Image (tube, rainbow, N blue to C red):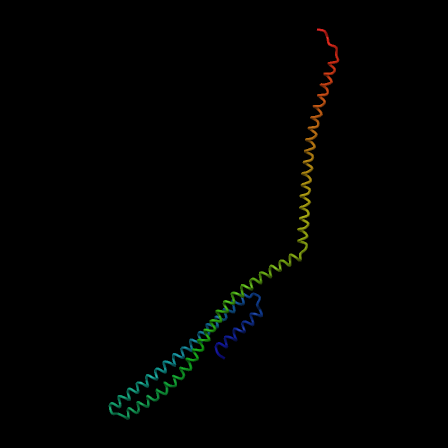
Length: 231
């Protein structure tokens, strides 16, 4: 099983386990991102090892090619020196290094193709994790809105189901109405009493003035009827 297949298995297992226990979406999603990033780190390490193997094969190929060139140079020296037997030995050694270099080249090409695929898979994994991060933020926001809505709806249902609270408000409103009516009545009675007292005082005053006038008129009539006394 490849490294990315193992990552997929681990992440899928974590997702299924966390979703089945998901009481708090935010906590679950944050943990999921943490797990994915941890797997990403492991993937980078695996890719780094593959790259190191590629570089090692490349150096070995270059070394074998270098040895081949060196033995070719020695063969040329032997030919110039008229030592054909020594030149043949050098060319056989060159041939051995050529075969080794060719084999290293094949191994290096295969490893390089594998590394290129791993790099592409790693980039794809990074992109998916970044996308998951964005989705996580959106999902958390949606979850918080849903949770708030549930709490509000629960409160509304609780209050609506408790008729005694509404009845208490209605009774208190009726009592306040009664208190206001009583206060208005008391004020009206006080005003009436005050007006009646004032009217009574003016009536008595008018009666007192009328009696004095009558007495004065009677006195004047009586005096007119009396005989006049001589001086």
